[in-house]
Image 1 (cartoon, rainbow, N blue to C red):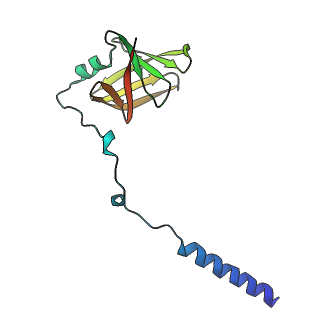
Image 2: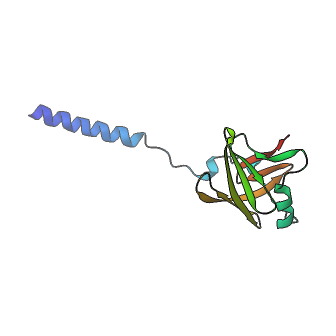
Image 3: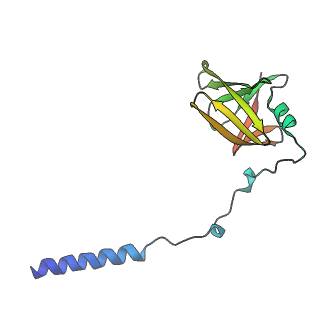
Amino acid sequence: MKFIIRLTSFTFVFFTVSCTSNSPKQVSTEDFKMDTSIIVKVDPKLNEDELKLFLYSIEGTYGWATKSNNITFDFFTDGRLHIQGPDGEATMWQGSWKLKQDQLTLDRVDLNRLVTYKMAILSDTLLLDTTVYTRIRL
């Protein structure tokens, strides 16, 4: 009986020491470098109309694609949004979109919900939150 009590006590002490001595160190945000390559300052001179014009397809293009997923968007002047799925025209949905300042709200019928993104223009690419979209060339 004494052996079992000693073994249990030893196990408890060993477990307590091992768990507390290797506890994770509390870190602050100063310990990490932030990836500033995704921070974009929106040009305050751009108004909603200019942002909308940027969304529309230009000659030789038909929408926006990203490398992070295989869903493409095509914005139309009347507020329609064509969403094309991974297998081309076999999966295509028609949603809608609207822009208020730099907040782009998409009716993602493929997801059955509204999604709002912070929109920015980065050179000739579209930035929705941190996802970069490029124009699809014909």
